[in-house]
Image: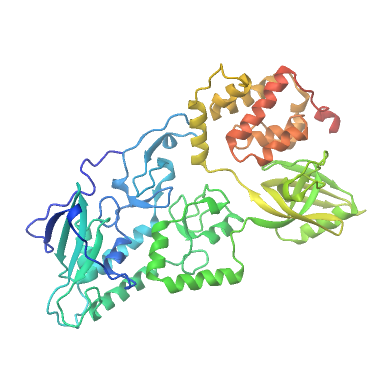
Length: 552
């Protein structure tokens, strides 16, 4: 993106046709006192207009772009981009371009691909323009003077005290100043002067009250969530630019990965708690409709609508299962027969798979429980009941969890679980860039060369290491890559997210080694785990389990 050249905070050139000439008085910062402002008034006119004002150009937002930090800027006000180095996953040209956020104190590097249009904010800016640029409202009150806006503007160590007559009233007058970029977004000590007798300087007269009511009504008509059809609370904007309640997005993602509005693929994690709040929309709803927001929050709390990751699951204590991979079960124990019948009576058809704690290691708050605390949520795909009560089940891994509490119900374990999700893509990229750019001192004691070399490899190189190993083993007719195994688990995936799960499902190594994958929260870390297996296998430092052929 090209830099606009001029500073976005540069004062605009005011021509003769400007109806809002400003008066400027300059004082040294060390020799002035600022005028006070009445903070008791709940909704000042300049605060209303500031809700749709760009923080860089100080004008109403034009083609609003949401940032990964939750803030919003005009598309043309985005800082210049630069190449991002040391990043190979997830790749793509757009992810290799970034910029340093200029919004307030953020100063974080944002990826261009993580920024996108804000459809709702675009509509709201248009609503403000439609209401505040319209002069057709009936004027019912005679004016004997115009209100004046006074504000402080700090530049180059000096304080400029500016003022302007608001000849179209408070809201429309301040909106006009904003359209010209005259009223800086960061203006401080804003105050109002009004010579009309008996009127507070910031008080709305009947005309202003009418305009404000009209504006709020028009804005409110745009703020219904298209999932719950109520006022949006805790707004979350999807990659396609549509905004919903956060809890509504979480509910949608349980059933589909398509946007409820445009039906595009959402491409976002189901753990929506980590997704940024749309700060602009949140501020707008809370400022203009505080009572309705409070009522909605109370209603959600009473309905039990929560984004709490904790969920109670029946637990099958058996072998390891992994996300995206199939699990094949023969259910014959009476306790698990009962459990699976109850699972099939539940519309979600889900249960948790955990592996045995064979060495009775302590599992955090669970103590030395029978099973390991990390597991996988399985979704039943096929269920076949046999005549004698046994059943055959094929289930697919959906997500990971950690058991926080457990109990025994009718002989089988039931656990209170919390979901385990990966770190964000931006954090994944940051870690890769940091690790691959770090210089390791080979002369320092305790440095493991094999570990060091893996740390210095890019995420894509770690994946290629695994793919090359699989291809080499396939050429050598390795029994764990028998066609029957591949028929069950699929061919080698080239997706860095899926490869470790597939590799762990087919590679005949101990469950203790594989278990480490379940608690790893980054793609890069899981690829490093699989790379260590490969290094050890190639060095023949450990022995493998019997081949899968003997188990088929």
